[in-house]
Length: 115
Image (cartoon, rainbow, N blue to C red; front, side, top):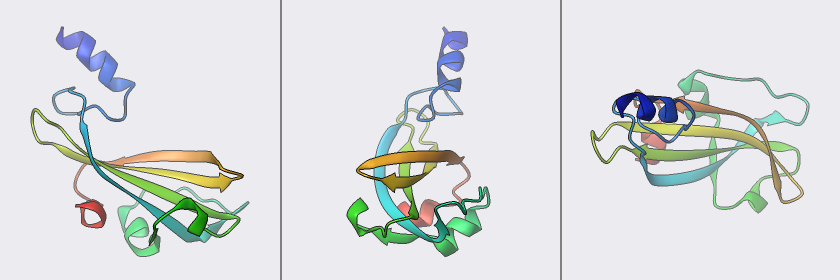
C-alpha cells in the first residue's frame, strides 16, 4: 500500500511529500503581481521575489487588466503536521484563469504571507 500512496502523491500537489497523505487546506489569499504584465511574464522560483512583489487583493475584479495574479494556498498534513504553500500564477482573462505555473514551497518560505 505504501507504493500506491507514493505513486498517487507524485501526481497531486496537495499530498504531503513526507508521509504521502492528502493535506488539508488551511487558508488562501489572492495577490496582484504589478511587475508582471501580459507578454512580460518571467518565472521566479525564489520566495524572496514573492515576498517583495505580491500585493493582497480581495477579489479578481480588483486586479487591473493585463496584470498577472498569484493565488497562495496553505496546506497542512493532518497526519504529520507538515506545512506547504502552493503559489499558482495566472493571468485573469474574461472571467477565466490562464495558468502559467504552480510552485510549491515546503520549507516555510512563504508562511508569513498566509499563516
